[in-house]
Image 1 (cartoon, rainbow, N blue to C red):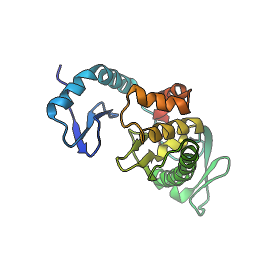
Image 2 (tube, one colour):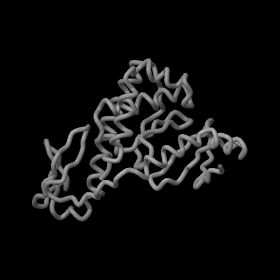
Image 3 (tube, helix red, strand yellow):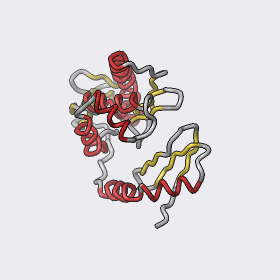
Length: 222
């Protein structure tokens, strides 16, 4: 059965990767020199995974969009905190065992929260990357925080580690799993058994943390 590619991105990467987007479409990332036949063969090999991923995505109940009103719950490092609308304040969003949002900023609540999460993500993730790098001898080039919606992290060919700010909503042990995952890609570019052995050396319980992301990933959004 022919599998339709909705988006093909070629880059300097060394391996082919597949992303099933939230709408069920398929994005393929491939090396610049990869032949079309090679890509199609890879798709056929992974057809079962693509089918299961699409079924899972289409069965997910959509999370209601935030309205940024008092009483709503927002995640930070795996814990739930309630939001209170208050009189106008500076900065518009504050956190102290709960979130307070200035009433005049309610209409732009998504942007305000995104900016706050982005700042926290950089601080938390940079510190954890440095910790694991020093302990296990990794030398990433730098850490970047993105607004990616379908990928928790990635490792660029030049050694830059990219993480979505949404990750900072997850528990620290889950954040650590994604960090270790991307650090291991500095040594093994693909997802071969050798790669997973590298991850397991550092984090023997990585399967539980990966499962948490699969089950709860849709909650990590504003």
